[in-house]
Image (cartoon, helix red, strand yellow):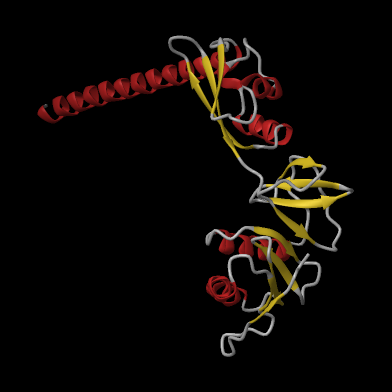
Length: 266
């Protein structure tokens, strides 16, 4: 008799647990459905944009950024793709490097477009025009003459240049260009041009008075390190107005020879 009563109590307890479990599952399901409904409403009905703000922009006016983004008041705040807006703006307004979107719903639905800008570093002569590019080789603008503070890249290879897009060129060529530029710029040497027309005779113009001949790009790190100290010694010995040619083409780690010839390089 006692065993039957115990079994009966256990069965009732089990039923209660099953009922509670079903209730919990049902409640969770309802919450999920509510969350999905809110999400769908947010994308389709709720939170129309009431304000659009632009920050981080110094080159383009806020109105230019908003107009180029194709965004309008009334667009749904959470239906906008950051990737799509970034792709549009970085192509249409090349000096924009990247874009971040921030959304606020209180006190009013506001979209903030946070812009990170880039700057002219390199320059390419193409079809009688000078196209500037940033450190990642993205084409930013075009001019009739080479802008100051840019480094002209000379090459005899065909280039594909379009505003807002990366210059299509040999990957190794640009890797060498970027390495030369970054190492010399860190020592405050202005680089007028980098000539990679001949892979066996890479040349650069620094401080508008020294043509430096690297030969091939082998031992490039060592050649650049040697050049940095050599320029100071040349100026100390020959005066601050001296100009000429520096030959590092025969330089190796074992035979660190370099030559300087004073001459008018123009």
